[in-house]
Image (cartoon, rainbow, N blue to C red; front, side):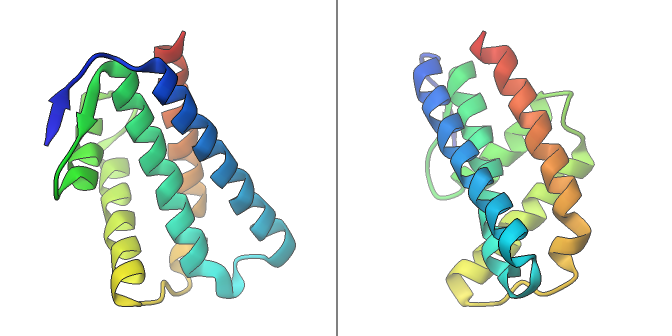
Length: 137
């Protein structure tokens, strides 16, 4: 459930810093080891960066997701932002589902999923950062 709260820009900034650290880790792994056998790990990390950025946007705008379907509803809340397309939201939801199956059921994320989606994830991350930057001014 998405609930209204007092906007919390400091919490949003803190979450942004966490997301940027995770993003640096992703880039370091890719540079040092490539995608290869790290597809599941990297896919989960891309999801975490995107989820954290969306959460930061919500906090900056005065919203918070709580409850069992919080991640799903957080992503659906992106429909309120014209910078993110429905296609991109569907991609994020697919990423969430794959991440959950990998994390909770031990299902590996196999090639070529990340190879085909990596650039799209990075584009979404950049768009989310721009949305957040506007809200933190």
